[in-house]
Length: 192
Image 1: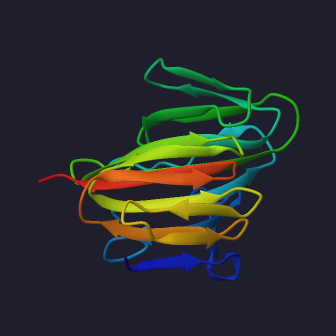
Image 2 (image 1 turned 60 degrees about the vertical axis):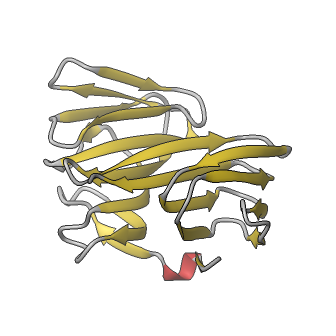
């Protein structure tokens, strides 16, 4: 199995599109970072305010640390994230206002270009062994705070250090075993 492990010193810090903060870009897929097909990033949010406009992208936002936030979208949808690993899925083109509940938060953000690809996000918050069903496409596994063990369907064993990102292309569906946590698993699939 071919795979990459991306370390924190390889992540890029970039300004938010609205200029009101900075994000740590873990990895993106596609031809360029300005018109990516998909992107994984993490960002501290220090004040309430409007989100950047990411028209033509679907977003999944996951609360990693902090006391939470509420997202009010101009679509009428409201998402309240108050517990670790709560998540919201929404259209990046919606006008979205975030209101912090009580202090700063850290979020994990998955973006996929609409009509081109989509993501499946699985959150594992347990130190015991857990089975992950993997489909074809790109598999990304992020170890949130401690080293984890990954056993692939072809029995390859990998140790992923804390705060590192694992990436591989999965040619066929299978069952993977993840030991340790918490972990954010993202599967990216392209539309035919």
